[in-house]
Length: 110
Image (tube, rainbow, N blue to C red; front, side, top):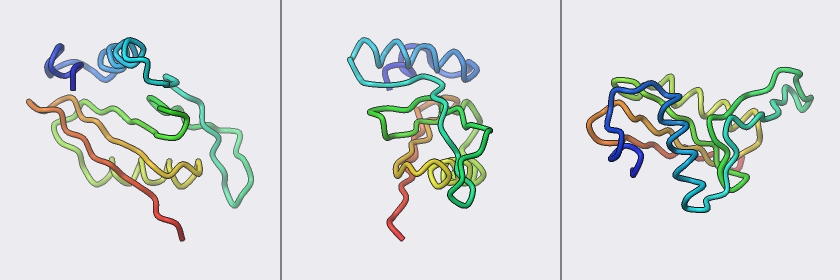
C-alpha cells in the first residue's frame, strides 16, 4: 500500500515492481524479484520457466498488474502458475485503480 500511496497510479508495472522491491528490502521482507520458477507438466519439469514478479517468504507468488481492472484472465493466470509450480498461495496486486486492488488466490488440497 505504501508504494501505491507514494507513486499513485499511472505508471507501468516495472516502476511499481522496482519500488516494491525497495519497500520489501527496507521492511526486511524476504523476497526474490523476477523469481524463475520451475513448471511441471505431468510431473516432468519443463525447460521453459515462469518468471514471477515476486516470490515472498519462499512460498507466496505476487503478481503485479497496472490495468484498469482485474479480469478473470488474471485470476486464471495466477491459478495456473500456482498449480504448475506447486505453490499454494498467490496475490494479485493492481496498481492502476485509485485505491490499490489486491486479490488472494489459494489452492486447496485435492
